[in-house]
Length: 113
Image 1 (tube, rainbow, N blue to C red):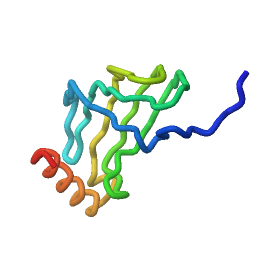
Image 2 (cartoon, rainbow, N blue to C red):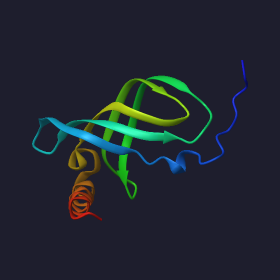
Image 3 (cartoon, rainbow, N blue to C red):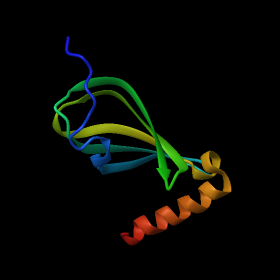
Image 4 (cartoon, rainbow, N blue to C red):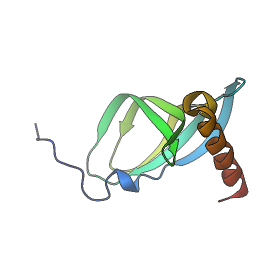
């Protein structure tokens, strides 16, 4: 077994996922539940099988939602069509500030910023 080595080249700072095939599964008074297929590049030489991932969705430090994925196999280089489920609920997760940040984020996203 190889010892653990710190990630260097690129690291997680170069993680830039591309989201496609977005589908709305459910809506609530302040929330959306979505699924999407995510593509990303693993800049390291390492592979991993991850049984469960839960990632917070933040904008400028404000929690807007979280995303989960199950049984993800990550390989070096391009990884495609990773099924992710996300809950977007800035008001519940981030309070009034979360609501305002979420509105601004969606406005900018729709405007192409």
